[in-house]
Image (tube, rainbow, N blue to C red):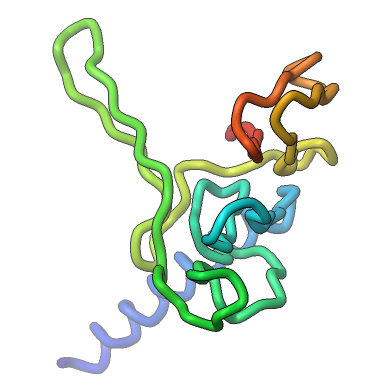
Length: 143
């Protein structure tokens, strides 16, 4: 591979990594860990089922059974699909392997993951009087 091409590829890679880091500087990045059931799973407000760009201190991201130190999932996330009025199929997904996030929080301090237990009510700024429907609800929004 010619030297000039290598330099351009390294420069492009550096720019892509820098843009991702800049985006994270102004966002409220957070994570939560499931505490109900037999699976202990890390979730982020970037739509991922891994630590993503948060400061999650653990090494195991999806543990089954909880407390076993057995990892069962390296990476996963939310996929949302729709069919537009013109018939076009649209899909948004969380990051794939080292890609950009389509789901990302804003810089608002309340733009985090809210954890609400079944039957409890939470006063979430963008969803007042939210009532949990499962044993453990995780509520967040994406920009």
